[in-house]
Length: 150
Image (cartoon, rainbow, N blue to C red; front, side, top):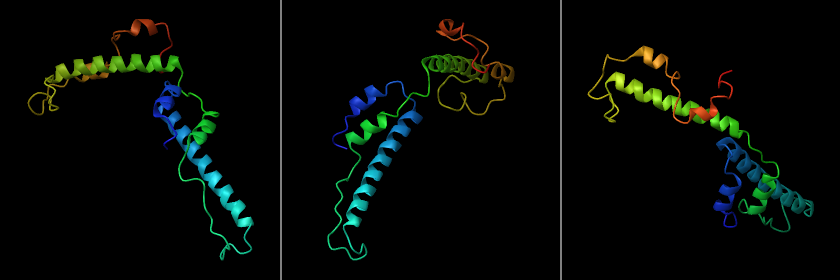
C-alpha cells in the first residue's frame, strides 16, 4: 500500500524472524478482510433483498493500509531471543568452518560445485561426522551458554 513505509516497517521489525513477519502480514490482511465484511454486512442490512439490491455495494477497502499494519503490530512479538540468535550464529560459524574443511578433504575448493574435477571417492566421512567439533571464530563469547541441543 502507498501509505505503508517499508523503511519504517523494517526498522520496527529489525530482530523479528521471517515467521514473525509473516504473522504480522497475515494479521494485517485478516483485519482488512474483516473490515470489508463489516462494510458489506452494514450495507446488506440496508437492503430488503440482497440478491436484488436497491443500491450498489461500494467498498472503502481496496488494499491493506498502514492502519491495518498498526493494529497488527499491537499483537506482534519476537519469537527468537537474542540468546537464540547468538546460538544459531555460533552453530552457523561451526558449520561453515567444518564445511570448508570437508571440502578440502573431498578435493574441492575450486568453487565450481563439482569438488574440483568430477566425482571424487576421497570423501573423509570422519571429518564430516565431526563437523561441530572445532570452535568457530567468535564462539568464545558464547562458550559459557548452554549447548544448542541440550
